[in-house]
Amino acid sequence: MLLARAGASVLLVDRARFPRDKACSEYLSPGDHAILERLGGGILDAVEGAAHAKLYGMKVVAPCGAAMCGRFRGGPRPYSFALPRTTFDTILVAAAAREGAIVREGLTVESVVFDGNTAAGVFARSGNGKRETYRSRVVVGADGLRSVVARCLGLVRSSSRGASHSRRTWRTSRGWTVWASCT
Image 1 (cartoon, helix red, strand yellow):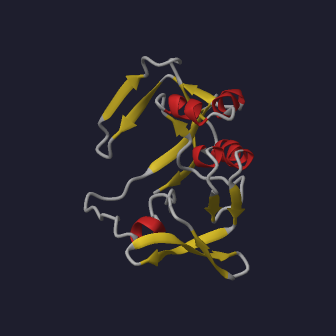
Image 2: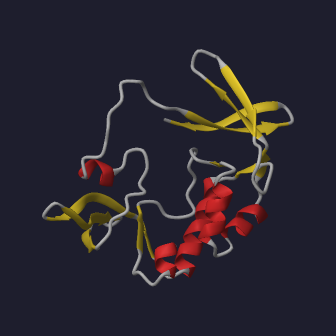
């Protein structure tokens, strides 16, 4: 968004079609408030105005059962947000498009285009199977845990510590209900 606002030609490519549901990343830390404010375009106000839970702290539980609890302090708000990815992604994609980014949904990045040793774009496949090449001066791989871009650039590190796991839960009047999980 910042690059598009500054006049750069920006192409946002995602294999998903929005809105899409995703169990991970429904929590925005209190530090994210300043980032959302910096992005501008009314994003922070849109998040604040969307249906969300206010989180005043968190509890982290290790596989062995040990737990740590903490409350948020400082910042302009004593809380953070928990909202569905369908809502948050819709806000972000709409803001990027308003700033001039071209949004291409349903394209799966398969590899990076190289010009010598420099990343110079991506190869992507559309939903109908057509392979397309998108050249650029800058490639940003914001493609998650199993990043194709990071793998192609040799930036992936393997860990023998085990897999991470998160769960999305909602508090109901009858107790905790697990809705979905991801690893």
